Length: 87
Image (cartoon, rainbow, N blue to C red):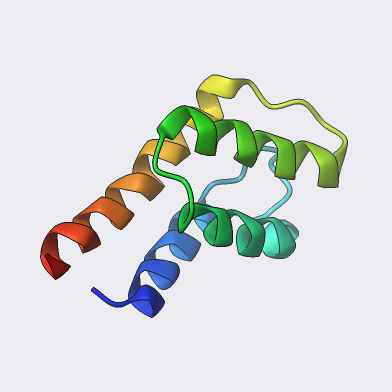
């Protein structure tokens, strides 16, 4: 799986995730930032904290870390699936 394919799958997951119930088009910038961080982070807690930071900063609303952990695991599963296929 190529980087572009990982990005596409990650973006789809993030577009479906709507933590503030604002609709799928409300998070374009956040999605770009999270996908970039996905490529440099491997630990679910670290990624979840970064996701929470990105979304909270943009929307000035709090998200429980548990919600961010759920999406973090899904995103890392996409990334690690790709690594297994490549190696």
